[in-house]
Structures are given as C-alpha cells and as structure tokens.
Image: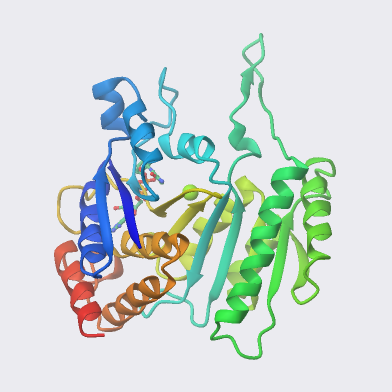
Length: 344
Ligand code: NAI
Ligand code: MG
C-alpha cells in the first residue's frame, strides 16, 4: 500500500526530530510520500494563525501525520490556540494512546508494559473558561458525554484484547483500569465510570477494575508493573501519561498517537525544548517511536515492530543523547537506528 504522510515539525527541536524520524521512515522500503506542513508559534507569528487553513486542507489529502512539537505561551495571547488541540478536535482524533514500556536506559523501571487510553476531545479541554464580572473568580466548564465515554471505553477494551492476542504476555490476563474521581464528581466522572463499566460487560474476557485518580497516580509510581490498559478522561489521562513517561526513561523516549476513525496524528510526548534547540542533541527516539505508532495505526504493524526492535537495540547498545546521560548527537542515534533496521 502507498501512504501519504504529513510532517508537521512545529517549533524548536520539532525541526530536528521530525526530519530524523523521516529518515528512519524512508529507510523502511515502504511506499511513503511526505508532505511538510506548517503549524505552531513561529507560524502564528508569521501568519497570524497557529494552524493555517492550507495545513488543514493538505491534511485532508494525507493518511496520517507526524507532529513534532509546538511552543505555546503560558499567558493568553489574542488569537493563539494550540494547534495540536485544534487538530484533535477538527479531525475528531478521539483516542490518545500512550504505550509505556520499559527501556534499557538508566532511570527506567523494569517490566513495565502498559497502555494509557485517554479520552481526547472533551473534559476540561473544551476550553470554555469564563472570568466573572468582578474579575475575582474564574470558572471552567468540564464536559463528559456518554457518547465520547463509550467510544473511548471501547477503544480501551479492544486494545486490551489485541495486546493479549499479540503478546508476549503469557500468564497475564488482559485488564482495563478505569480512572475517575466519581466520589467527588458523581455526575461527570460518575457518567464516565458508569459508561465504561457498561461497555466492560461486552468484554467478559477482559478484566475490569476501577481506581480513583489520586490513588492511581500513587500506584502507578509504586507498582507500574501491575497495569495493562489504563482508561481515563482527558485531563487525568494527560497528567498520568506524562508521569508514566517518567517511569520508563523520560520525555525523550515516549510517544503517543491521537487516533480517530479516519486519521491519526502521532507525536512525541515532549515539547519544543527551547533550551536545547539548534544544538543537534535532541533525542530523536520519541519521534521515531511516534512514527512507529503512526505506521501501526495505518495498518503496518510489522514495520512498526521493526522500528521498535531497532530502537530497543540502539538503546541497549548505549547509544544515548545527553538527556539519557550519553554523548551521542541526534544524527548518530538516527543513523544507528537505521543501521539496526537494515541489519535486522
Ligand atoms: P519540553 O518537553 O519542551 O522540555 C522539558 C525538558 O526536557 C527540557 O529540559 C528539554 O531540553 C528536555 N527535552 C524535551 N525533549 C527532549 C528531547 N527529545 N531530547 C532531549 N531533551 C529533551 O517542555 P517545556 O520546557 O515545559 O516546554 C517548552 C515548550 O514546549 C513550551 O512552549 C510548551 O508549551 C511546549 N510544549 C509543547 C508540547 C507539544 O507540542 N505537544 C508538549 C509540551 C510542551
Ligand atoms: Mg501532555
């Protein structure tokens, strides 16, 4: 099959790690064509929008996209909205999938192999905030719908099944952990919980358990090995996902896929890293893994597996950028991954 893949480097090290991942993709021998598209803070400053209409139009003609990172100001800037959040909503990328797997690097916990399935369209990310007239009180609307909760729950249970079928996990039965805070928020989180548990009834072969979000954070750190698939509403999933990345080697290694029924946007966890941008030392692994997630979502799991194994070999060989305590540069790690691919 032939695929048209959009590359959206964005800002900062996005412009270094996305080209690195492109080289890896080009070395696979698949029929891929690439379209480079603009988005982000620099784009905003140049064109007055962080997500130009041409980018959106060009995306419609692609099968999926690899997104680097964008810089976002933490104060409010008139007219600026984060392009990744806009893309998720525009393309209805309702599932955010974050595999968290032990890596042979310092600081990674052993034997972790879990998947965080995060609802990607609603919750506080509907971004309906309001400042009351007195200027002293700010209110945000948090939206949870049965439809979005059911749809993301199905993704979680389907993935739990597929992981079991694919696996490498003999003796471990598939399990979904439903995260919520329904004890404090019985209507919103209660609806999420109730909907997920109703979906669970359709998957008698998959175990289900529930976990309050604060104790989930605690147990995720204390005993990450016990988890399989973790299902969470948007904000909790966002926070747990980044915490989980810290368990297995950090920002430079972990990726996620934003998946909808028609499109996928894969991205590294990290941001634009202005402190190291332009130095050639950004770790390309997270974005290379994002490229693997993209291929898997497009229906090329075999190529995705090849990339994962090549990355594993390079990390095991100690070819590390400075964030992992090594001295390798972006280009060296990238070439090592391509070499490992070609000798496999
Ligand atoms: P960051 O992820 O950009 O950087 C945090 C720290 O990790 C920095 O010290 C950085 O040098 C290091 N780091 C990150 N990725 C690395 C890599 N691949 N290799 C080696 N070291 C790496 O987060 P920060 O500093 O909070 O945010 C910087 C900018 O990025 C902000 O404008 C923020 O809004 C944006 N951001 C964008 C995201 C996205 O596009 N999805 C996600 C997170 C932040
Ligand atoms: Mg995040």
